[in-house]
Structure formats: structure tokens, C-alpha cells
Image (cartoon, rainbow, N blue to C red; front, side, top):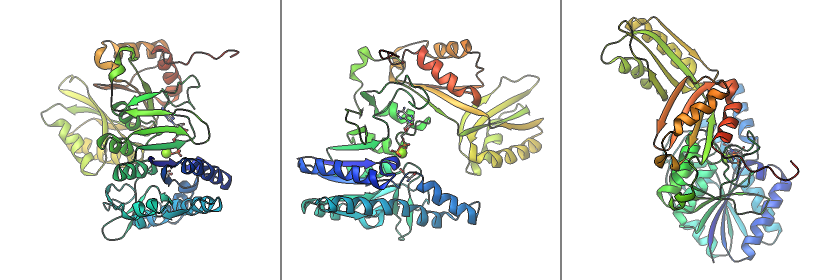
Length: 411
Ligand code: ADP
Ligand code: ASP
Ligand code: MG
């Protein structure tokens, strides 16, 4: 008999009919003798709807209250799923994050899980109940409701699996596994049987939202067997694994990630003296804006240009600071651009292959796509390009690195 944590995402519980379908599925597992803890998201669109309501009251909602409100989305689905199970004769009980006691820090809207009290859950499992837990939420030491950031139900699932030492954490969603790239953008994308934690972590942090980054961090840290599966179609899904063993046949690139969430800022004609990077980026990080890619040009006439990217939400704030800095340090001008996108190729196979970056640049050049910024690490290469070329770039790279699925007959 196994203990399995199953997480169902927003579209999988998006209607009452779907919730009934999920209940049927959980019932089958239960009948096979497994102990089941289910984590659910809010019905799809609900979290956005709630955030929209708050924004009608104030542009920058008070975060504590925002958490009180958005956590209701998941509270609805746990109750509905528990009822659907009990209607089928499956004993079940629902818990909010607070009721389990998923203790988090107090960083509203992006809280981190500190500990989980598993006593209630274990007692219920022992009594033969399916335990249904609200994803995405917890409680801080003062009793305030917190939430874990968008996509946070994945992290609830993995953290519960780690606390309960579950045999597997199954993430059920609207695709049948992790693909070489978002299958909604590249129809030729292929499902991967396996992907390493390290690669999945890069894919998630570079924009593939199929798993929340923190859920992958947790799974890697506590070695939780993690699988991504389709909620309503049979199939093996994708296993996220520690081992890199089958590297003999490993492709150089495992996947392509992309994101449209960044914006670029440039300061030109900066007097090139020691400490210049600190003078420019110090005020940006003091304002709590996270900087991603950074490029400083070779200096010319003792002045240099400096470009970096921030999250698009932080663009206006960062630009104002940069203009102020430009005035303070005697730079010529500060400007910015939000029409950019970042495309990244990811793969542990890169470690043993030279020339991966140039193959990427060649593929982009063939499509006449100009590269604005580049950054590399051991298992990834990222480029910033003009946003309108994003889909073209992803498709071109998918083909260039031989990731395309073979065309099916008749296609
Ligand atoms: P859920 O509501 O179940 O949590 P999400 O929308 O958060 O689902 O995540 C699933 C979506 O992630 C898919 O519908 C797909 O469009 C997107 N996605 C992005 N990159 C990938 C990838 N590499 N493999 C699979 N899905 C991906
Ligand atoms: N409902 C939350 C969101 O939409 C959490 C989740 O679905 O994982 O971000
Ligand atoms: Mg999700």
C-alpha cells in the first residue's frame, strides 16, 4: 500500500463536472488500496477574478487582505471535492492550510513554507479517509493567512509529500507531462519521459510555468519522487529525477523555456570608473527590484553603456531610479524597453558538448532575429530578443536542436 499525494490544478477542477471526474479518479486509487492526500487549486480563473476585485478597490492592494481573499478560491474546491468523494461513499475530509497547520513566514503573497504539522492528516489516513488540502495557502506564526505565490499549489503538494514521506507526488494538470517546450506554442513539442531536477529547476525559473519553481526546489531538496501527469488521460507522464545516468543517449538540449515578463533598461554614456556597476545597480536593489541579466559594454572614450533586465512589473519604478542615477553620476541618458522576451535552451547535455551557444546563435541568425543580450550558465544559454519574434525563435531552436516530434502519419 502506497501513500500518494495528488495535486489537481485549476483547469482540472474548473467546473463541477470536472470536480466529479477528479472524485472518480481519486476513488479508483483509493479502491486499489492506496492512502491518498489530494491538494487542489482554485477553479481556473478564480484567483485572477479575486485579484481583479481587489484592484477595483485599490491599485496596490494591501497584501495581508489580498491573501485573506485569494485563499478563498482553494477553500471552495476542497469542500466541493470532499462532498463529491463522500457522495461516492469515499470517506473524506477537507482542510485549509491553517487547519493542517502549514506554517509559513509572513511574506504575504509569496510566503515560504517553514513546517507542516502532519498529525491530523496521519490520523485521518489511518481512519481510512481521503484528506483534501487547500493548495497555495498557509498561516504565519501570528495566525495571518498567507499565500505561496502564483502556481503555489504545486509547492503545497510537494511539501506535503515531503512531510508525509509519500511514495510519490503526482501533479495532475491539463497537459500529459513536461514537454520539450510549451506545447501550446510549439505543436511539435515532445513529452519527456524523464527530466532531471536541475533541468526542471532551470526550465521553471526561465519561464515554464508547468511547475512552480519552489515545488521543484523542495522536491530536489527532500528527494520527493515527482511526476507530472494529465488529469483525465491515461499515460506515464514525466518523472522528475535525480539521475543523469542515461547521458549516453541524452540530447544536448532537453528543453526550451521562454518568458515575456521582463523589461530592459539601459544607461548610456556612463563615466567609466571603478564602482560604476555598484552605483547603477545599488539603488535598484535597495528598492527591492530584482535584476536578472546584466551587460556592460567595453568602454569607449572613458564612457560606457550598461544594460540590465528587471521584472516588467518593476519597470516604471526601476526606470525612475535609473534616470535619477543618470543625473547623479553624469551619464548621458537612461531609457528602457518592455517589448522584449527571453528565450533559453536548457540541458545537462551541454556540459559535455562544446559549441551549443553558437548553434543557438546560428539558428536565430538564419531567421534574422537580432540578439540583444546573452547570458550563460553550466546547463543553459539565454538570449533577449524583440518580443514579436519570440514564437519564431522558439520554433526555430526546437528544430535546430532536433527536438521536433516526428510527424504523425497523415499529417
Ligand atoms: P495548473 O492549473 O494545472 O497548475 P498550469 O497552467 O499552471 O496548470 O501549467 C500547465 C501549463 O503549463 C500547460 O497548459 C502548458 O501550456 C504550460 N507549459 C509551459 N511550458 C511547458 C512545458 N515545457 N511542458 C508542459 N507544459 C508547459
Ligand atoms: N490558485 C493559485 C493560482 O492561480 C495557485 C495555483 O493554482 O497553484 O496561482
Ligand atoms: Mg500551475
